[in-house]
Amino acid sequence: MKIDRSSPVPLHRQAEMLLRNLITKEEYKEGKMLPNEVELSEQLKISRNTLRQSINTLVTEGLLIRKKGVGTRVAEKNLYSEATNWLSFSQEMKVLGVKIENFELHISKQAPTENARQFFEITNQVKVLRLERLRGKENFPFVYFHSEFNPKIRMDGTENFNRPLYEILENDYNIIVKTSREEIRASGANPFIAGKLEIEVGDPILIRKRFVSDINDLPIEYNIGWYRADSFSYKIESVRESRSFSSNF
Image (cartoon, rainbow, N blue to C red; front, side, top):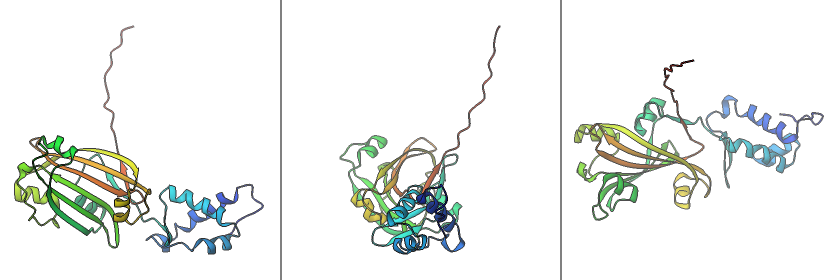
């Protein structure tokens, strides 16, 4: 890598283009760490501030991941979810060929959150089964899930939640889920989520809420997931229906 000081292109832009080329190389595709900033700035013969400006651009685009006290590594290929044919998380990952690991699993019975209470049309006095899971790829947690279930289902927490959730509902409770209404927004990680996802407080995350109903329109599950923004993208494909118009002139 070499900076051309006779070029009219600013140094930080040249460094950015060199880094873009570097991270496409085979050895960096699986999330390899970049050389530290001191080494890179010396190699390119630019200041650390100039180099950091280039790195920040790629971090913002989700191509690099910077972790305080550790360094900067190449982001692995993002996981995509498509709205055209929604799937459970386990099904999504299976389609992508990603083997999922459960890092934490917590089961409890508690008063419903406000979203769950309204969705299930129950009172605060009715306790619901709550499932919380930290999930991701090997040695890389990237989503924290919180699920609450309609008490009409009679789930008691003894279920084997290492099985796909909707497989449990269908095989054990004869419930076939059909509809998922989703809300997605970007946010900064609070201290709790940052600790779970191994990121810094304030780092970007995607918050994805699901309101899931069965084939009879019975509310089944309220789910909220906090995703590392550097590991998840959401694609939406919309088709506009054609219309026929008649005109009289």
